[in-house]
View 1: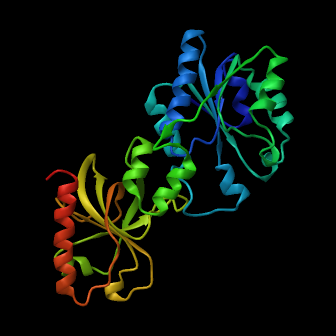
View 2: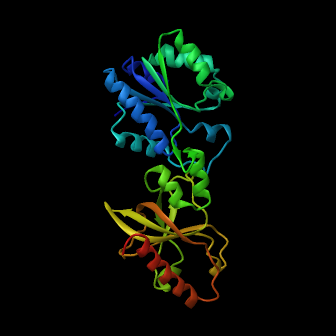
Length: 310
């Protein structure tokens, strides 16, 4: 997949692409339906496929969000789309307050028709674009019909009697419903973080933990609690249990992210870990003493093994 950044790179794109436009946060199963449709039309018409996406994510700019919102960073979206093998070209346009003021007609006429020059457009059923999201599918079809450009609409991808969406996944993650989020993502939700020095309490209890500082705070951190996870380190995957919260047993107020890796004992300070969430084990609880905490941690580890099969 060829990657292009900014409006200034559009003149390097091949013309007559089959295109789709969107944020694609999460690159979930609903997005995959759209990507497959773009790929199939491009292949049948002997064209190249093109995704047009935005960075930063429009909602983070319009609502001035700086943390706990995205399912995937732009780098992760690019990687996930590339990994599908369905798309030939990806164009990332910078989204800022100025760009958000583009009227739908200017966005379609000037950028899409005038610069990108597609042969075919594929869009999701609920697509909106332009200032205040005033452009919609009906508007797009009215403009493109005059240009003899075909517009295909992909209907919603339904799971559990609901259309799959990034909004739904964000809700699941924030409420700690990891299994539900993973099911409609099509993969296990993940975060990345550097290992930083902690207070060493886990090691004193016999359960050493890696304290995690998030690599990208704009990504969603699931609800406080204990989770079964896998930890990517040095090209290998390790099972672990992660605690997100304020460690009420020790009366801490600060939010911490700690992971105990079951089969790894080496010093990880400074390492970048990729942590996939498998399932939620329990809520965060305040224990009366260390003995009861240790007993619960042993139960948590057995639960983790049960979840991941031994």
